Length: 246
Image (cartoon, rainbow, N blue to C red; front, side, top):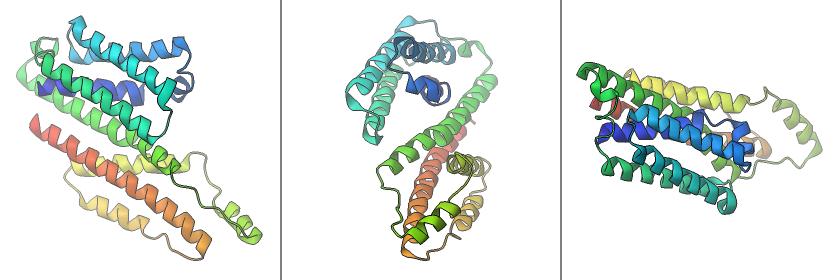
């Protein structure tokens, strides 16, 4: 059953966070874009489960479409709707894994040698962990920070200074966060958690000065802690999966 659960969860992560582009998300209300996303969900489920049993990919595809429609139509796009959506999808996957526990064993993966199967399961665990940590983590952190008002500057002289100091590469913060989460996952997988401490220490060089700079620093640190925390949990889960199939 665990092999089936792994394959279905990784298929979901790939479909929702790697193969669903920003353009697809923006146009999801349009039938063709919506259908394309659901086709990707069903296709990846079919490919990674390795089974031609239509009950698996049809159930996941139909329920995914229903929940996505409800989210688009009524729930919105905040942090809470995001978690409701993901919990529902993962709940359906868990039910399917219990209902059809031998899906992967009866598919193309089950025809391979045991050592090759274990290697594939470890590979799926690492791929799923990377997507969960880097891509899904980026979405969670961004939505969480949307609930926190970004610091504002009231004094004109400080406004000019803040605008000068905060100029940076477009999307630089998101890229830095993604790299941080990727490195945390890597450090955990290679058994070098000390590297995480060094990264966190490097972040601590942010200093508090005046009130407005302090507000901005606190905003950045909140995002950093959210990112680090998500990456640590994702990394521990990934490490446990790799050890299980090791």
